[in-house]
Length: 195
Image (cartoon, rainbow, N blue to C red; front, top):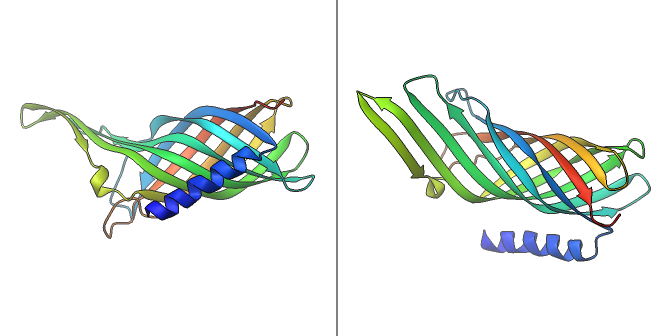
């Protein structure tokens, strides 16, 4: 696992050095988890942001990667006990961008998420007792989360773009047999440092 992560990191860094466009990105995530139907949870809000590198391949196709911090999770507050699952990842996307016009691109590609933090916060009342626990659950999670990015970017000018997308988790992020995946809607602003 460490070899795979090292290789991915080396690829991103080596490409970033020769990138035609270096940028920064910051935004918000609307996240949830889905499984075989046994988990019912509410959307949780998180942040995303980091550095990106873009390489033109043709006049209408570019490759974009980066190192992005991303918060994911879910929450459930339907009973006296409230549960909030919190995960933070270092995302390494490998997206192909197809420019429909010079101002709009459609984006698609795999995303590799390296788990940084995993916590389960439980608070409320149980059998007349106040509960306030923040449990580290990282050892129960897989270190790598694979997803598929689907999205679009709208360029306001040469430096600034608005991005919207969906990240579908395709691998089970929990150790064990249960099928549990992330679902992330992302909105962000990107700023090119080259222009």
